[in-house]
Length: 338
Ligand SMILES: [Zn+2]
Ligand SMILES: [Zn+2]
Image (cartoon, rainbow, N blue to C red; front, side):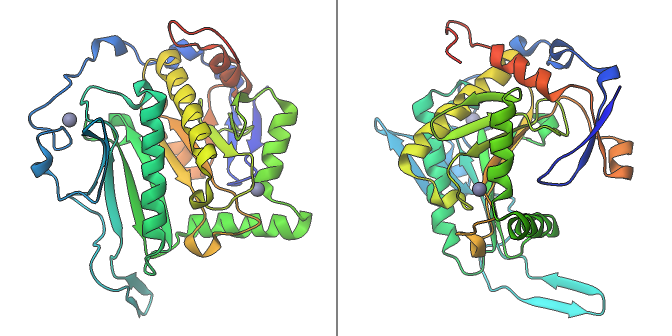
Protein backbone atom coordinates (compact mmCIF):
# COMPACT_ATOMS: atom_id res chain seq x y z
CA UNK A 1 0.00 0.00 0.00
CA UNK A 2 1.44 3.42 -0.94
CA UNK A 3 1.82 5.86 1.94
CA UNK A 4 1.63 9.64 2.19
CA UNK A 5 4.26 11.08 4.53
CA UNK A 6 4.68 14.65 5.73
CA UNK A 7 8.09 16.26 6.15
CA UNK A 8 8.16 17.90 9.62
CA UNK A 9 10.50 20.70 8.53
CA UNK A 10 9.05 21.98 5.26
CA UNK A 11 5.55 20.51 5.81
CA UNK A 12 5.59 19.07 2.28
CA UNK A 13 3.65 15.89 1.55
CA UNK A 14 5.13 13.07 -0.45
CA UNK A 15 3.54 9.92 -1.82
CA UNK A 16 5.91 7.05 -1.17
CA UNK A 17 4.88 5.00 -4.18
CA UNK A 18 6.17 1.58 -3.20
CA UNK A 19 4.04 -0.09 -5.90
CA UNK A 20 6.15 1.71 -8.46
CA UNK A 21 9.34 1.23 -6.48
CA UNK A 22 12.52 1.39 -8.48
CA UNK A 23 15.78 -0.36 -7.67
CA UNK A 24 18.82 1.93 -7.26
CA UNK A 25 20.45 0.57 -10.41
CA UNK A 26 17.37 1.58 -12.43
CA UNK A 27 17.94 5.18 -11.35
CA UNK A 28 21.70 5.23 -11.72
CA UNK A 29 23.19 7.12 -14.61
CA UNK A 30 24.41 4.82 -17.33
CA UNK A 31 27.75 5.07 -19.12
CA UNK A 32 29.12 7.40 -16.44
CA UNK A 33 32.54 5.86 -16.97
CA UNK A 34 32.65 7.08 -20.56
CA UNK A 35 32.57 10.75 -19.58
CA UNK A 36 36.19 11.65 -19.10
CA UNK A 37 37.11 15.34 -19.06
CA UNK A 38 40.60 16.71 -19.82
CA UNK A 39 42.44 18.15 -16.79
CA UNK A 40 42.78 21.48 -18.63
CA UNK A 41 40.43 23.20 -21.09
CA UNK A 42 41.58 26.31 -22.95
CA UNK A 43 38.08 27.81 -23.03
CA UNK A 44 37.38 27.30 -19.34
CA UNK A 45 37.44 30.48 -17.20
CA UNK A 46 38.15 28.42 -14.07
CA UNK A 47 41.28 26.62 -15.27
CA UNK A 48 44.74 27.83 -14.10
CA UNK A 49 46.24 30.13 -16.75
CA UNK A 50 42.78 31.40 -17.78
CA UNK A 51 42.21 33.54 -14.69
CA UNK A 52 41.87 36.65 -16.91
CA UNK A 53 38.67 35.18 -18.38
CA UNK A 54 36.81 35.65 -15.08
CA UNK A 55 36.39 38.88 -13.04
CA UNK A 56 39.23 39.67 -10.54
CA UNK A 57 39.19 37.21 -7.67
CA UNK A 58 37.92 37.98 -4.17
CA UNK A 59 39.86 35.20 -2.44
CA UNK A 60 42.33 32.45 -3.20
CA UNK A 61 43.58 29.64 -1.02
CA UNK A 62 47.09 28.61 -1.96
CA UNK A 63 48.73 25.28 -1.28
CA UNK A 64 52.19 24.20 -2.36
CA UNK A 65 52.66 27.45 -4.28
CA UNK A 66 49.51 27.21 -6.41
CA UNK A 67 45.91 28.02 -5.81
CA UNK A 68 43.65 25.19 -4.70
CA UNK A 69 40.39 27.11 -4.18
CA UNK A 70 39.52 30.42 -5.82
CA UNK A 71 36.57 32.79 -5.38
CA UNK A 72 35.51 35.11 -8.20
CA UNK A 73 32.45 37.30 -8.71
CA UNK A 74 29.97 35.63 -11.08
CA UNK A 75 30.51 37.11 -14.54
CA UNK A 76 26.77 36.96 -15.12
CA UNK A 77 25.83 37.91 -11.57
CA UNK A 78 22.13 37.80 -10.73
CA UNK A 79 22.61 40.76 -8.36
CA UNK A 80 24.82 43.85 -8.20
CA UNK A 81 27.32 44.41 -5.41
CA UNK A 82 27.27 48.20 -5.71
CA UNK A 83 24.60 50.51 -4.33
CA UNK A 84 22.03 50.72 -1.59
CA UNK A 85 18.89 48.74 -0.91
CA UNK A 86 15.75 50.66 -1.81
CA UNK A 87 12.24 49.33 -1.47
CA UNK A 88 9.45 50.55 -3.69
CA UNK A 89 5.72 49.96 -3.43
CA UNK A 90 3.36 51.15 -6.12
CA UNK A 91 -0.13 49.73 -5.74
CA UNK A 92 0.39 45.98 -5.70
CA UNK A 93 3.75 46.26 -7.38
CA UNK A 94 6.52 45.80 -4.84
CA UNK A 95 10.22 45.79 -5.63
CA UNK A 96 13.65 46.05 -4.03
CA UNK A 97 16.82 47.24 -5.76
CA UNK A 98 18.84 44.24 -6.95
CA UNK A 99 21.68 44.55 -4.48
CA UNK A 100 23.54 41.47 -3.45
CA UNK A 101 26.57 39.29 -3.94
CA UNK A 102 26.94 36.46 -6.39
CA UNK A 103 30.20 34.56 -6.28
CA UNK A 104 31.61 31.43 -7.83
CA UNK A 105 33.85 29.23 -5.72
CA UNK A 106 36.20 27.22 -7.96
CA UNK A 107 36.75 23.99 -6.04
CA UNK A 108 39.90 22.68 -7.70
CA UNK A 109 42.45 23.75 -10.32
CA UNK A 110 41.88 20.43 -12.12
CA UNK A 111 39.21 20.70 -14.83
CA UNK A 112 38.51 16.96 -14.79
CA UNK A 113 38.10 16.55 -11.03
CA UNK A 114 34.59 15.85 -9.68
CA UNK A 115 33.95 17.13 -6.15
CA UNK A 116 33.29 13.54 -5.07
CA UNK A 117 36.85 12.61 -6.00
CA UNK A 118 38.63 15.51 -4.28
CA UNK A 119 40.76 14.31 -1.43
CA UNK A 120 39.36 15.05 2.06
CA UNK A 121 41.95 17.79 2.73
CA UNK A 122 40.93 19.66 -0.43
CA UNK A 123 37.26 19.34 0.45
CA UNK A 124 38.11 20.76 3.88
CA UNK A 125 39.78 23.78 2.23
CA UNK A 126 36.59 24.27 0.25
CA UNK A 127 34.37 24.20 3.35
CA UNK A 128 36.84 26.54 5.06
CA UNK A 129 36.47 28.88 2.11
CA UNK A 130 32.65 28.67 2.34
CA UNK A 131 32.93 29.74 5.96
CA UNK A 132 35.30 32.63 5.29
CA UNK A 133 33.07 34.07 2.59
CA UNK A 134 30.00 33.49 4.73
CA UNK A 135 31.48 35.37 7.69
CA UNK A 136 32.81 38.25 5.59
CA UNK A 137 29.58 38.77 3.66
CA UNK A 138 27.46 38.44 6.85
CA UNK A 139 28.94 41.72 7.98
CA UNK A 140 27.39 43.61 5.06
CA UNK A 141 24.31 45.34 6.55
CA UNK A 142 22.52 45.20 3.18
CA UNK A 143 22.49 41.40 3.26
CA UNK A 144 19.69 39.40 4.90
CA UNK A 145 20.34 35.88 3.67
CA UNK A 146 23.37 33.99 2.34
CA UNK A 147 22.82 30.82 0.33
CA UNK A 148 25.78 28.59 -0.50
CA UNK A 149 25.01 25.88 -3.02
CA UNK A 150 26.39 23.59 -5.66
CA UNK A 151 24.90 22.46 -8.97
CA UNK A 152 26.57 19.36 -10.36
CA UNK A 153 25.63 18.33 -13.89
CA UNK A 154 23.18 19.52 -16.52
CA UNK A 155 20.08 18.16 -14.79
CA UNK A 156 21.08 20.13 -11.71
CA UNK A 157 21.33 23.36 -13.69
CA UNK A 158 25.10 23.58 -14.10
CA UNK A 159 26.34 24.93 -17.43
CA UNK A 160 30.10 24.71 -16.73
CA UNK A 161 32.02 21.45 -16.44
CA UNK A 162 34.73 22.71 -14.08
CA UNK A 163 33.70 21.82 -10.52
CA UNK A 164 32.43 24.87 -8.66
CA UNK A 165 30.02 26.06 -5.97
CA UNK A 166 28.18 29.36 -5.73
CA UNK A 167 27.19 31.86 -3.10
CA UNK A 168 24.28 34.27 -3.47
CA UNK A 169 23.60 36.88 -0.80
CA UNK A 170 20.24 38.64 -1.03
CA UNK A 171 18.76 41.81 0.49
CA UNK A 172 15.52 39.99 1.36
CA UNK A 173 14.43 36.77 3.05
CA UNK A 174 12.23 34.70 0.76
CA UNK A 175 8.69 33.74 1.87
CA UNK A 176 9.71 30.09 1.84
CA UNK A 177 12.50 30.70 4.36
CA UNK A 178 10.24 33.00 6.39
CA UNK A 179 7.55 30.30 6.55
CA UNK A 180 10.06 27.70 7.71
CA UNK A 181 11.34 30.07 10.38
CA UNK A 182 7.80 30.75 11.58
CA UNK A 183 6.94 27.05 11.69
CA UNK A 184 10.12 26.34 13.64
CA UNK A 185 9.38 29.20 16.05
CA UNK A 186 5.84 27.89 16.63
CA UNK A 187 7.24 24.44 17.36
CA UNK A 188 9.73 25.92 19.80
CA UNK A 189 6.99 27.87 21.59
CA UNK A 190 4.74 24.80 21.80
CA UNK A 191 7.32 22.15 22.64
CA UNK A 192 10.14 24.10 24.26
CA UNK A 193 12.78 22.62 21.96
CA UNK A 194 14.32 22.99 18.53
CA UNK A 195 12.34 21.17 15.82
CA UNK A 196 15.51 20.17 14.01
CA UNK A 197 17.18 18.77 17.14
CA UNK A 198 13.99 16.76 17.65
CA UNK A 199 13.96 15.48 14.05
CA UNK A 200 17.57 14.40 14.42
CA UNK A 201 16.88 12.65 17.75
CA UNK A 202 13.99 10.71 16.19
CA UNK A 203 16.05 9.75 13.15
CA UNK A 204 18.87 8.53 15.41
CA UNK A 205 16.38 6.54 17.51
CA UNK A 206 14.80 4.96 14.39
CA UNK A 207 18.30 4.49 12.92
CA UNK A 208 17.00 2.86 9.70
CA UNK A 209 17.36 6.02 7.59
CA UNK A 210 20.83 6.96 8.84
CA UNK A 211 23.47 6.82 6.12
CA UNK A 212 26.49 7.76 8.24
CA UNK A 213 27.12 9.27 11.67
CA UNK A 214 30.26 11.08 12.78
CA UNK A 215 31.31 12.77 16.01
CA UNK A 216 29.68 16.09 15.07
CA UNK A 217 27.26 15.34 12.20
CA UNK A 218 24.53 12.95 11.11
CA UNK A 219 23.68 12.19 7.47
CA UNK A 220 20.29 10.63 6.83
CA UNK A 221 17.50 10.20 4.31
CA UNK A 222 14.53 12.07 5.83
CA UNK A 223 11.42 10.05 6.73
CA UNK A 224 9.41 12.00 4.13
CA UNK A 225 12.15 12.41 1.56
CA UNK A 226 10.60 14.17 -1.45
CA UNK A 227 12.75 12.47 -4.08
CA UNK A 228 15.01 9.42 -4.34
CA UNK A 229 18.14 9.63 -2.21
CA UNK A 230 17.48 13.23 -1.07
CA UNK A 231 19.59 13.57 2.03
CA UNK A 232 20.16 15.88 4.98
CA UNK A 233 23.34 16.44 6.97
CA UNK A 234 22.63 17.93 10.39
CA UNK A 235 25.20 19.21 12.91
CA UNK A 236 24.61 17.46 16.25
CA UNK A 237 25.32 20.65 18.19
CA UNK A 238 22.49 23.14 18.04
CA UNK A 239 23.48 26.15 15.95
CA UNK A 240 21.28 28.29 13.72
CA UNK A 241 23.98 29.72 11.50
CA UNK A 242 26.58 27.96 9.40
CA UNK A 243 28.83 30.83 10.54
CA UNK A 244 28.95 29.29 14.03
CA UNK A 245 30.71 26.09 12.94
CA UNK A 246 33.92 25.31 14.90
CA UNK A 247 37.23 24.31 13.28
CA UNK A 248 37.03 20.68 14.46
CA UNK A 249 33.46 20.53 13.17
CA UNK A 250 34.61 21.81 9.76
CA UNK A 251 37.08 18.95 9.58
CA UNK A 252 34.40 16.44 10.51
CA UNK A 253 31.84 17.98 8.13
CA UNK A 254 34.26 17.85 5.18
CA UNK A 255 35.10 14.21 5.92
CA UNK A 256 31.41 13.31 6.02
CA UNK A 257 30.61 15.25 2.86
CA UNK A 258 33.41 13.36 1.15
CA UNK A 259 31.94 10.02 2.25
CA UNK A 260 28.43 10.97 1.09
CA UNK A 261 29.53 12.35 -2.31
CA UNK A 262 31.68 9.28 -2.87
CA UNK A 263 28.82 6.92 -2.04
CA UNK A 264 26.59 8.71 -4.55
CA UNK A 265 29.34 8.74 -7.16
CA UNK A 266 30.00 5.01 -7.00
CA UNK A 267 26.55 3.84 -5.96
CA UNK A 268 24.52 5.81 -8.51
CA UNK A 269 27.03 6.40 -11.31
CA UNK A 270 28.06 10.02 -10.70
CA UNK A 271 24.52 11.43 -10.64
CA UNK A 272 23.69 15.09 -11.18
CA UNK A 273 22.85 16.71 -7.86
CA UNK A 274 22.32 19.96 -6.00
CA UNK A 275 23.30 20.68 -2.46
CA UNK A 276 22.56 23.76 -0.43
CA UNK A 277 23.59 24.94 3.01
CA UNK A 278 20.40 26.07 4.71
CA UNK A 279 21.63 28.59 7.24
CA UNK A 280 19.54 31.04 9.27
CA UNK A 281 19.04 34.60 8.00
CA UNK A 282 21.69 36.99 9.38
CA UNK A 283 19.30 38.44 11.98
CA UNK A 284 18.62 34.95 13.44
CA UNK A 285 22.23 33.94 13.88
CA UNK A 286 21.81 32.87 17.51
CA UNK A 287 18.27 31.55 17.18
CA UNK A 288 17.30 28.73 19.56
CA UNK A 289 14.61 27.44 17.23
CA UNK A 290 16.39 27.29 13.86
CA UNK A 291 19.19 24.85 13.04
CA UNK A 292 21.36 24.93 9.92
CA UNK A 293 21.85 21.87 7.75
CA UNK A 294 22.97 20.76 4.33
CA UNK A 295 20.33 19.45 1.95
CA UNK A 296 21.52 17.27 -0.93
CA UNK A 297 19.22 16.31 -3.81
CA UNK A 298 20.38 13.89 -6.49
CA UNK A 299 18.55 14.66 -9.76
CA UNK A 300 17.51 11.13 -10.62
CA UNK A 301 13.88 11.80 -11.50
CA UNK A 302 12.14 14.89 -12.84
CA UNK A 303 9.59 17.12 -11.18
CA UNK A 304 6.55 17.08 -13.48
CA UNK A 305 2.98 18.32 -13.81
CA UNK A 306 1.58 16.62 -10.71
CA UNK A 307 4.18 18.25 -8.46
CA UNK A 308 3.70 21.66 -10.08
CA UNK A 309 -0.07 21.45 -9.86
CA UNK A 310 -0.55 19.92 -6.43
CA UNK A 311 2.52 20.95 -4.46
CA UNK A 312 2.86 17.27 -3.53
CA UNK A 313 5.63 14.92 -4.57
CA UNK A 314 5.90 11.31 -5.64
CA UNK A 315 8.95 9.40 -4.49
CA UNK A 316 9.37 6.12 -6.36
CA UNK A 317 11.78 4.77 -3.76
CA UNK A 318 11.54 3.95 -0.08
CA UNK A 319 13.70 6.27 2.10
CA UNK A 320 14.64 3.32 4.34
CA UNK A 321 15.81 1.33 1.30
CA UNK A 322 17.81 4.33 0.00
CA UNK A 323 19.67 4.57 3.31
CA UNK A 324 20.35 0.84 3.45
CA UNK A 325 21.68 0.90 -0.11
CA UNK A 326 24.02 3.85 0.56
CA UNK A 327 25.29 2.34 3.80
CA UNK A 328 26.45 -0.60 1.72
CA UNK A 329 28.25 1.39 -1.00
CA UNK A 330 32.01 1.46 -0.54
CA UNK A 331 34.44 3.18 -2.90
CA UNK A 332 36.73 0.72 -4.70
CA UNK A 333 39.67 -0.27 -2.55
CA UNK A 334 38.18 0.76 0.81
CA UNK A 335 36.90 -1.57 3.46
CA UNK A 336 33.66 -1.12 5.36
CA UNK A 337 33.86 0.73 8.68
CA UNK A 338 30.26 1.95 8.97
ZN1 LIG B 1 38.42 24.31 -16.22
ZN1 LIG C 1 18.59 22.49 17.04
